Structure formats: structure tokens, C-alpha cells
Image (cartoon, rainbow, N blue to C red; front, side, top):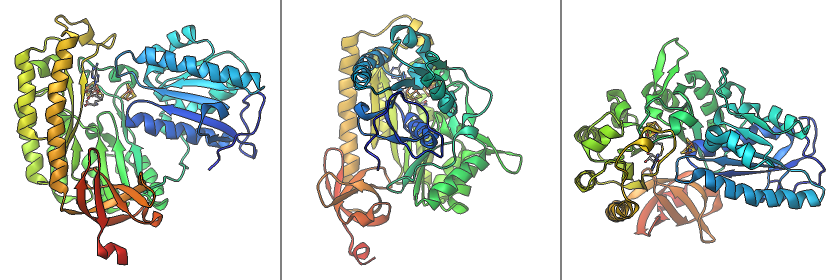
Length: 469
Ligand code: SAH
Ligand code: SF4
Ligand code: F3S
């Protein structure tokens, strides 16, 4: 681990033969796609000598990887940039240069405004242009002025990202297989920030997965904004769906645990449901956002299904895999949502029983259809609905976790626990599990007797069988 960066004048890119290192600090907000993208940006910068440092004060380059989904997203970016400006100025006083880059979905949506309001930013780059980062750094370091790259280039960024990823620690890794979205839900910016839906060729995904497995990865989470709409070119000149891809990853690449997120109910096809029955590597946890339980609101959201269709879909999934844990996203207070609509959402929650969920108050994203809609819901009504909904979801989550106390489950240990002498991992149902155990367990799967349920985690003990292993 490189935690020191040598003193430097201007942050000049180094040739790959140079042993000089530069500090890189990446701040990541938003979804797992952004987490993945941050790792890839670090990968493309590694041949230039950039190594991660723990604080922006030591960084020759700072990347703020932003998310546009939440309320006042741009304002949060500007306030963080204000803080980073001070870091950059303090470094300049010490004679150290800093390249400041803004990436991610706010960069994509509001690149021009960022450069106008924060002229000390050197690079603004959208999610489709990360492979061009070394060239942008070179341009910025030549003091050619700020660089903005927010178009959707024809070439696939994945073809240009380096194959050698930093060795993942803890046996679990993300792998992006699909990007963008054509669904145009009324409230959502993703189709505008991430562009049209596109899938990586199956062969490229398989090659990346093989490298991950060779590096010790046991569990891969396949990522996409609509991951179950995956339709990549297969090596056999046919289009492969997610099911075909997952089967090859399990049977031929040898991945022991496969997850995928985020799925859209409309793309949950029969073959994928069947795979939950007969592909043991598919973990019994599914994030399947429903957003609302009211047919009127679902229609206004342009989700393309009814509440009963979602209930039926969950029924078929549970027939296929009875222990499947379900997770969802909910939005309360979408324009036009009445008390009766909200009651329908509560009814759906009670009917399904979720193991986990994320819930949000609707917030307007400029340029989306819902932003211009009539009948926006008052803030205090949204607050009250969110509280009521979260209280029920909390009870459901606790009940789900309580039900696993007393169960013996295989846990993939991914890191240290909070207390010394503890290791922490993930159950098949994506619960955090802590046990007393040696560091040598990290990156391995071992059976745990689950004994306790805490607020957001479980505690257990390694089974004797594991101790002897
Ligand atoms: N592709 C995923 C969701 C991506 S965005 C899907 O279709 O489910 C993640 C979540 O953020 C969404 O599921 C939604 O619940 C929430 N979200 C998106 N835009 C929002 C907005 N304008 N206001 C409140 N919540 C929003
Ligand atoms: Fe956004 Fe809807 Fe696409 Fe999900 S499916 S990314 S919520 S537009
Ligand atoms: Fe946010 Fe962009 Fe992800 S808006 S949720 S970072 S796709």
C-alpha cells in the first residue's frame, strides 16, 4: 500500500517506465456503477504512476466521482469542490500542483456549469470517457486550460480500459456488464446521464471474470442500470442474455457466487427465474425495485407494470427459489401520489415482505418528465409517508434477519470486523456477518452458525467443521 506521495511541482504524467509515484485520491458518491468506475479510473492512471492516497492533501490528482440522483446533487458537488479548492490552494503554497477532476453523472449533466462556477476544476469527464483520462491529464498538466469530455463517444470505453485490475481484496468484486437505460422512468436522470442502454460483449465479460477468478475472487456482482436487460454479443454470433452469461460464468469460469444488480421487473424473464431454481451459484438475494404499489403512480412513473404483476413475479421467483430474499427501492411523494396511492404501496410492502429496502422522497430532477408534472406533493406529506414506510420496512428487515438466527450459512469473508480479532463477511442473503476468526479467512468461504441479530449485522461462530479445515 502506497500511502506517501513524493513532493512534486506540477502534476505531470509519468511514463510507464518511471518509478516515480503520484498521489491519487478518488471520492466516490452514488451507485455501485460509480464505485466500479472509480476503480477503473484508478486502473487507467496506474501506468502513469498514480497510487491511492488516503487524503486529498497528499494527492497530486483528486477525482470527485459524482451522482445526480438525489436532491440538490449539483449543490453538494459545488460545496465539496469549495473544500477541495482550499486543499488545492494549500498544496500550491507548498509548491505542489494538483489536478482536480469531476467525473460521474453530475459532470455529465452539468459539465458546463461546473467549469463556469468552479474554474479551478481542471477536468470534467462523463462516465463514457474514462478511458481517455490519461490523455486528459496530460492536456490539463500542459496547462492547456480546463478539459471537458462529456460526449458519448462511438468507441466503447470498456475496450480501452486496461485489463489488469488491481487485485481485489476479500474475494468479492463488481463487474459492469451493461450501462445506460432506455426506460425513461418519469423521475429519473439516468437515461440522460448514462446514455442509451448498451451491453458489453460476453467474451469481454468472461475474460474479465477469468482474471478476477485467477486473482482469488469467489463472488462477482454483475452490474448494470438494468442488468437483467443484458443482451451482449456472444462468441457464437448470437445475442446472449443474462441467464446464458451467468451459466457460463458459473459452469465454465468457475465463479462460486454470482449476484446481479439492478434489475427491472419488466426484464425478469422466465429463463432467469428458472436459473434461480437450478443454478446454485446464483445467490438467493434479488434487488428488484418496484418504486410504488399504486397502479396509477406506476403508470405515471412509466414503469410498465402493475402492482399485481409485481406480486405475481415475486410469487414465481419464490416458487423457483423459496429462500430468495427480496430488496427494493421505493419513492414516496411522486407528483400526483394521493393518500390512497400511498396506502396501496403500504399494502404491497405488507404482501411481499422485504429483506431490505431503500426508500426516498421524490425529488425533482430538472429535465425529467415528472419535474414538469402538476400536483407536486407537499414536503411534510412526503416526510410523513417516508417515516411510515421506513418503519414498516425496518420491522420487515429485522424479522428477516431474526429468521436467520439459528441457521448455519456459508459466509464469504471480505474483510476485518469492527472489533479486533473479528472478520466480517456476507451471507448468501447479503447480510453482514461478523465472527471471531483469523485474518486468513479473508477471501474464503466458511460455514457460520448465526447466533445474534444486531441493528445492521449478524454475529455468529465458525462451525467446528470450518475450524478443522
Ligand atoms: N435502474 C434502477 C434504479 C436506478 S436509480 C431501477 O430502475 O430500479 C436508484 C433509485 O433511486 C431508484 O430506484 C429510485 O428509487 C431512486 N430515485 C431515482 N430518481 C429519483 C428521484 N428523482 N427522486 C427520488 N428518488 C429517485
Ligand atoms: Fe432510471 Fe427507470 Fe432506467 Fe432505473 S429503469 S435507471 S429508474 S429510468
Ligand atoms: Fe447516481 Fe449516476 Fe449512479 S446518477 S445512481 S451515479 S448512474
